Image (cartoon, rainbow, N blue to C red; front, side, top):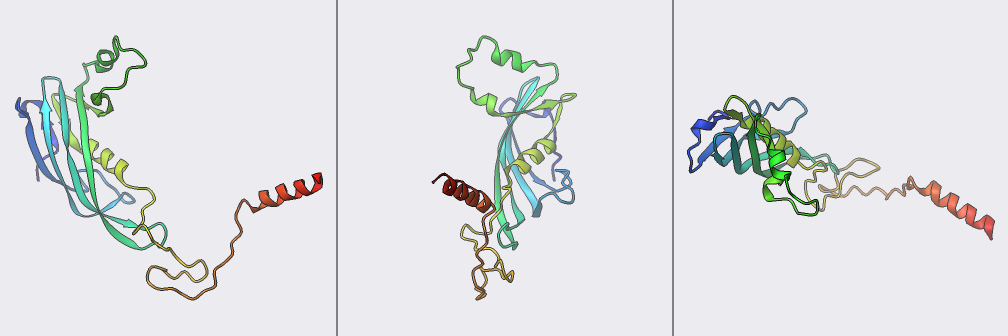
Length: 189
């Protein structure tokens, strides 16, 4: 396993191909953070000059998730495109980018890339990878698009088998508004 800390001097002018297995410890993932089946694979190309670096690559792994409808556990292959910019503390790149630009001009592609700091001519990919990974994980995970969820009466997973319970007619939380609106309408007539 390669270290996720890179020195600017280690990056040749033509760029550096960087491949590494990334562990939970590398990403500082703790209890309650997403679970993965094994390590994640990170492959990238890194470019640098004396004060800046650019990282382009892919982070891949198998994510263990719980479906929000049926509460079943499932695995999902996750591929996260990585695009990051590192800059030294002494570079004031925001002034350079915005100087002389009109308000209505569109952003350049470089401005859409996340920016991180280089300290003592070294930069750590771990924090950036952690952030990019966590932002890419869906909040409302479904085991399948047509997940039927759980029976409201008995709790049976309806993806596995139908339970035979009668369909519950649950009242909408907005029913009170409907009744109130209908009541007011009747008074006006």
